[in-house]
Each structure stands twice: as structure tokens, then as C-alpha cells.
Image (cartoon, rainbow, N blue to C red; front, top):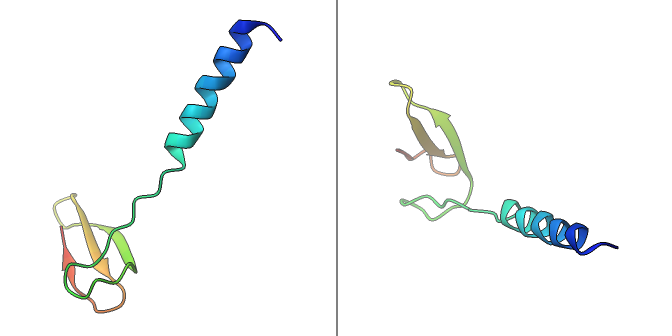
Length: 57
């Protein structure tokens, strides 16, 4: 396999690895990871804990 293809495959693997990184939010009130992302009234992003109902942005 040509070196240029091996370099490209390496870049694709790095990108896939970065994409698969998971960021988990936790509720600041109860610590639960059951958090939903919702649109706020002014178009911003807000979060709501589906375990205790706490909301924040």
C-alpha cells in the first residue's frame, strides 16, 4: 500500500477516535447522568434532569 494511503488511513482513524469521545453531563442538583438537552425560550441551549426535574443552562 502506498505511504500516502497509509497516512490518510491514520488521519481517518484519529478523526474517528476523536468523534467517538463521549461527554456526559450530570445534574448539578442530584448528580444523575439522565440529562436531556432542550432549546430554551430565547433559542439558547438548556438542560433538564429527567431524574429530578432540575433545569439549568
